[in-house]
Amino acid sequence: MDATIVMARPLQFLLKEEGIFVRDILLDEIAKGIDAAWRLTVDDLIKTTKNNVLSSMTTGNSNGNMPLQSLWGQMVLSFPVFSEDKDREQIAGLQRLAQALQQIEQRDGKTFNKTTLNSIAQASSALQWIATVGNPQNKQRSKTVYI
Image (tube, rainbow, N blue to C red; front, side):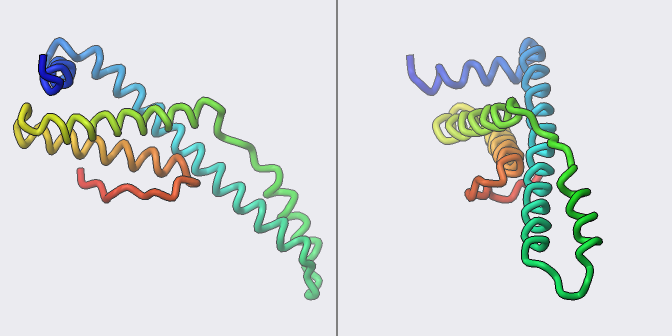
């Protein structure tokens, strides 16, 4: 059997009425990925802020604002951690799903109509963008998503 047909069958099933339960699972995973992305992004922002505050506190200040800096520093250092270990795994799962969609788009161009291929490309781009937002250390930026 042709590899294109083998790859196309699961996607065709997913797009039919019978695939609704699989689509629901995918939507749940995407929602979890979005939650993970914002938690990881907020944690990265807090980490950067903490580093900046600590840096400014250690360099000293000659204008007499050290008590204010100390209060600000204590407040910033007490910010909670929002992400969990599983959040990075969730983002990695979204990246794998985006890559799988890209492969379908590239290999199965003759199997699906242009509208379906465009939808696959948009879904892949959106998942890559979510994964990039959730992974601030990832220097690779995905292309702009138009939905």
